[in-house]
Length: 196
Image 1 (cartoon, one colour):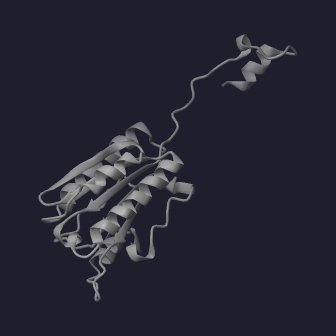
Image 2 (cartoon, one colour; image 1 turned 180 degrees about the horizontal axis):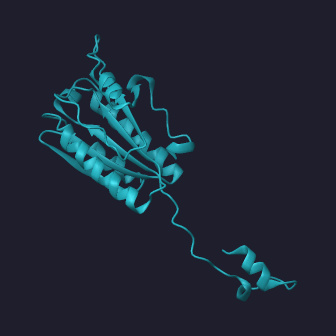
Image 3 (cartoon, helix red, strand yellow; image 1 turned 90 degrees about the vertical axis):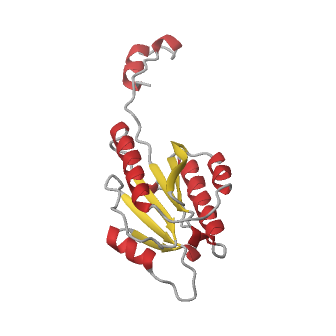
């Protein structure tokens, strides 16, 4: 609503519907959280995949509460496939994710290209919006892909829970200049600010 114009039109009289002046608002930047979920064979060990899905569910819920968009890319076998294309975060994303099984390799280079494409499209529509990529993995990849350049922030969440971890996810995060979190520490949530 255009309050200054509405109040000028109203003058000293009581506000009536005919006084109200609307204006086209600017496009509100919509934050985007892209979750890259590793469902390769190594994530089937122990409870890694189940814990990664729970972590992803917490990210989706935080994004839903803050009004952000979410996209979910499952990476395993020979392909990276979108479980949820970019949209307003909804609880239904969690149900789709729970049905995913683990197996095969980790085609992260393909995943990184798909993530970059989605982020660039989002940036064209919402140039001022914040874009955060979450990579949920045990780090067991042959080669670390290129960092998605359209992301403002990247967080690599490490699910390598071996007694002597390989440390690959930590090195991956360092190579990308990303934040590294141990999954065992729990999901930090999406508290306001730029994560919103």
